[in-house]
Length: 334
Image (tube, rainbow, N blue to C red; front, top):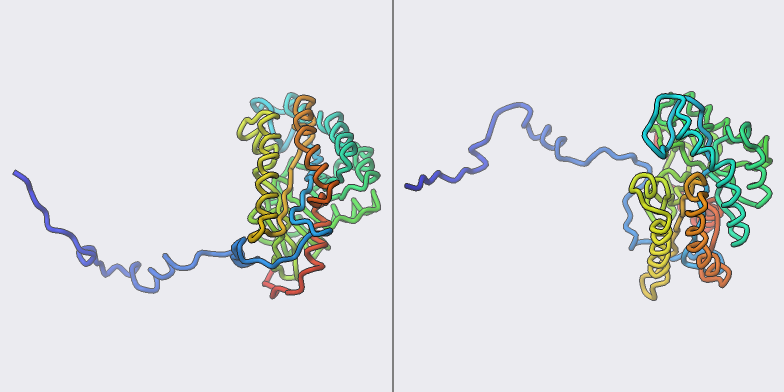
């Protein structure tokens, strides 16, 4: 025998619980909390500016030089985390500063590619010659905290403000180069970070990875540009997180470049786009990975030499988009 039950209607579940009052339901299913730094704008609804020399695709190297405290704090790991002092993982990361970074700089020089050097100020105490070699090459210096052993999001307001001011003044005093850009250690922010960046003199951030074009951000102190920084075309999440080998990571860079070039140069939908390549020398500076990095960067450099793309630094990109943009956002409360 089949038992047939009556169909239910929404009214069968009606309740007089105060939590289901209309104003509570509206709050529960209404607009979600927003950062209020920028509005949604689809990639299809943009202006038509171009990069210098009429290029449609800008490519930059985000070259991360980092230093970690010995016996404490955070860091990427090659093998299982060991009790401190974790000599295995500390010394593997230090290979980047002693060997890998220098091999990468040689490669960038061979290809005539400047880099956006994202660096911890503790390197000025640990290996200042590496920082000065980047300055001598004409690379851009970008603030990246004092050390990557700590997350910026863990800092109180006053500590964070001191960190931002310290990094800018220390780099200026030590190298004569005043940074205009910032990437937080571990890409971590507080709710105040964008406001504090502008307040302490920075003009752009690499923290946000939400677009393929620079985005104007609202802060309590005026405009902060967000320059796209990759979390996919980035050796740490790909090689460490997804366990890619050097060949696969290089193929990924090539595929990303080919597709973005096609998007940028499309005859009817083409736009000026930004492709960043995030590199850490303790990863890509290993000889077998460097071989593959050389393979994939060579045709990109050749495309730049032919004038087909613009190889720049993040600061170049921020400065250009600021020069062609006239609209100012309303300030937000900090």
